[in-house]
Amino acid sequence: MTQVSLIAKIAAILAIVAALVGLGAYGASRHYAPIIAGLNQQIGKANQAIADDQAAFGTLKGAAELQNASILALQKEAASRAAEAAAAVAAAEKQNIAHQSRAAVLLASKPEAGSDVCAAASALIDAQIREDRK
Image (cartoon, rainbow, N blue to C red; front, side, top):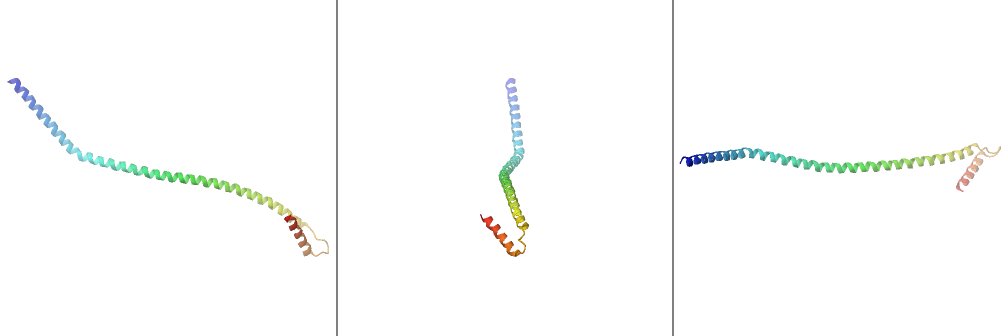
């Protein structure tokens, strides 16, 4: 019987150890369950914040790309307008030179001595206008 009682004692000790391990695991789960639940909740909030930030980043990125495209379009338009303005200034300067030379001719002309100065000037201007209309 000693062998049976030894086995029974070992089995009883193992049952007690198993019960203590089970109670320890149950106690640990009861202790850590609220902590784990709180951490899971924080992880959920952090994941939601990340998703919100990514959505906001996407919106801002789209707006920035649109603004950059608009700025580039405005820069191209400004360069085009500057080229047009430079061409217009060059054309105006060319016309100015022609008009200045015509004005110099008018100013340099002298009416005949003894003639009516106003009538001579009027005739000269009329002749210039007829020439311009040709």
